[in-house]
Picture: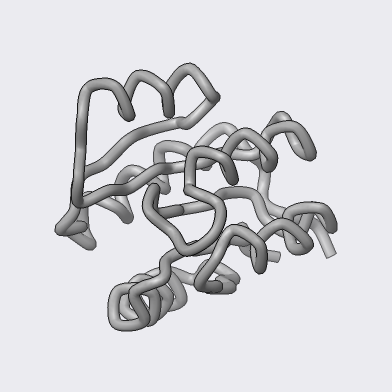
Length: 126
C-alpha cells in the first residue's frame, strides 16, 4: 500500500493541484480545507505525512502541527506559507515540523522533499 498524505489547504485551487500531483506520484492522498477537518483523520492514524498551510480558517497550521504531533509523534509534517517569517519558521521547526517551505510551491521541489521525508518510513502493508 502506498504512503498516505494529507493536504490541509484552504485555497481550493492549490489544494486540488497538490492532490493531483501527489496522486500521479502514486501516493494515497486526502485533501481538506481546515485543521478541524484534518484532526479526525490524524486521530485514525490514517496518514504518514501532512502538508499544511500555516494560515487556515479556525486553527492555524502551527496549532494543527502541535495537535497532530501529540496524537502521532512519528507523523511527518511539512509547513507551507506565503507569509514566511523567521519567527514562524523557528516556531514550526521547534514544534516538530520536518520542513518549512515558502509559496508558491514548486511541485518538483515538493515531490523531492516528500520522497526524502518518507525515505526512512516503510510503505504501509495491507
